[in-house]
Length: 230
Image 1 (tube, one colour):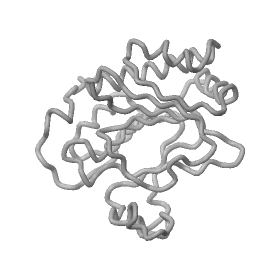
Image 2: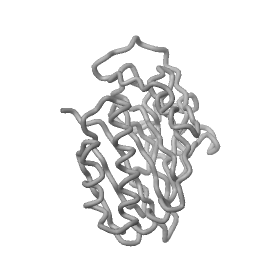
Image 3: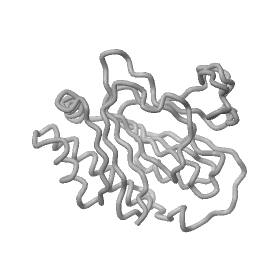
């Protein structure tokens, strides 16, 4: 990355309380991911276009492993071999494993982590269909194939309508947001860093997001990375 990475761990190096304003930052440059350390930011999106060979690799994995659901706790050094063992020995599996290992290395470097919790999942339905916030410091999410994660900008949401506050109504009718146009969505290939409620001084400002509805006869290939405590 051209910018120097701030490896300050938000769990052990507290920052001063900030006013409850949060924004999303999006850019096609990898270095944008360091903006996750900005106090007024709760999502950063690296807008990347997947190479054709990576798209083909994701398609192959979807076809060969339609029920894939794997959880690994891995270090950057073991990420490639561990993921390749799950995906198989094909050339396409190796291509995808290399990219995933790159993201693991980047995630651990950015947050000064020795290990990350990695989840790879093939989905034909919305895993978390309601808007919600995560009780994590920060999560990386990327969709290699299919529709990608939806999220709400902080300023458009009435957070009292989350969870039981929706009174049993669908998100679209609960008063959580006013217009369907308020909903933002990642694209396949995008790498999102989403602050949760456990990022220091981010309580009440974790990113509101949900899984998208998956069209009939299609599937998603999704990767998430989370902090691991030693």
